[in-house]
Length: 333
Image (cartoon, rainbow, N blue to C red; front, side):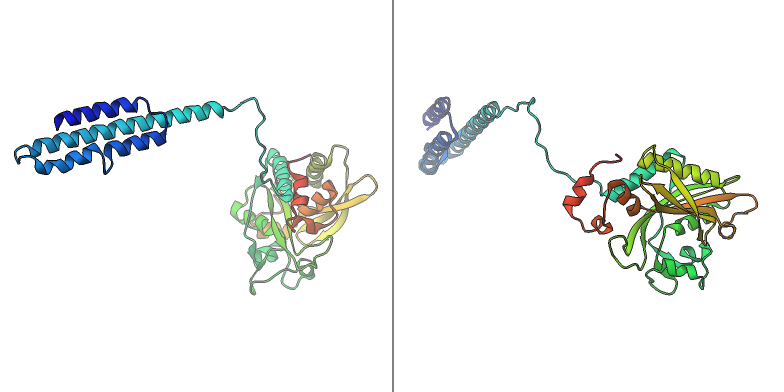
């Protein structure tokens, strides 16, 4: 029985040297270790041996079986490595070929406009402030010098959650909150975000739109600072050849107030409202109007995007038409 085991091990080892593929290896494995193999026959023959020889021969058979298993696993690993090497050789990557271009997402055009704003104003020393969309009437109106019975509320009519809470009609509440938090210290901020008004949706109006407001409060702030800031931004965003015009206007939260127009080559077009912060607003925010002054401005993002990119309908910004959005990949141009 020992000779049969020795002969079997030598035979299988020799045949493994000639195996070149996995199928041949499986056939040889079945021959060496299958149900009708020599090992199986030897295990069955143990019952015919004298009792004192059975333990030793059983041990020898198990050791031979383990050796055969190891032979086959080693050969299998060698065959797999060989197949892999052949596959890699055939599928070698030419690194000089151009890569495959995959389509990917990009900023929404309004996000790009916001980033252009932020890049400019951060460079001027401004901070970015944000606030909640659902706002208290107190911050949205009262702290901006718009009392409950003030007629200006009709211009900012919005969606009310309850008697005290509403969807903000401008980002000015962020300015009011910042004034209270600053406790009389200088302020230099812009406030981007969504706003809501009960406007009828049409080519130029939307019940929800984006806005950026700016606020500066410090000693010796004048209208000249306001005009210089706005002119610098307009030249940055629309081009160095652009000019602006300031027209007297009225806003409850600024005094004096102005409408700002930009010359588009043929005529002046209104783009934003601005003015010096009203003394009442300064007082409610914790500032002494005899010691500090401030200016504020507010601009609709859709309005300036429509001017810059010659977009003829505000609804394009919100209908998620990929054909439209793909035209505005990238940043400032």
